[in-house]
Length: 153
Ligand SMILES: [Cu+2]
Image 1 (spheres, protein in one colour):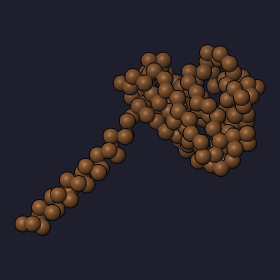
Image 2 (cartoon, protein in one colour; image 1 turned 30 degrees about the vertical axis):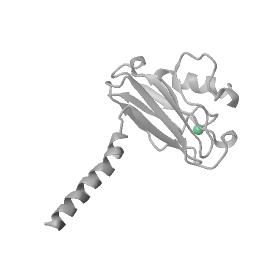
Image 3 (cartoon, protein in one colour; image 1 turned 90 degrees about the vertical axis):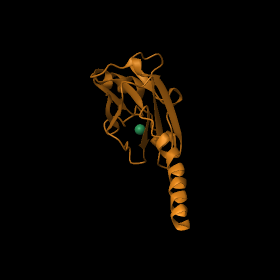
Image 4 (cartoon, protein in one colour; image 1 turned 60 degrees about the vertical axis):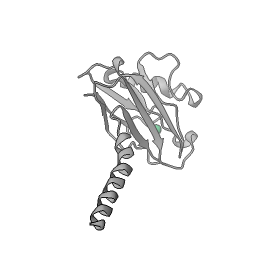
């Protein structure tokens, strides 16, 4: 009997420990990493259309400084991909390789180097369900490898 009670208590304790982990799995909060090999770890990100706000956190899992291997996360309409990449390239590191006032940029993080992170939060209302969005890194020369599809599901 005592043994059963102990088991039940252990199960309850495990349940309580596991709960905070599940509570963090908010589908409106997305994570992506870049590395020293000029790669994102995800080629697709999606958030439910029921999100009020969407937060994307970019981690740099590498060691190189942002001057050499900086990464950002820039969200655009698929059709604006090349134009935003080109405009960003000449904007410079101080501007996070995003041209000032570029209306084609829907959301972006700053440029991060090895071990750093940055987040951006934007209202889901700026996106339309079923439309085609892409994300990219606008550090010069990175967009050919570092890009993906963003979907509002
Ligand atoms: Cu990059």
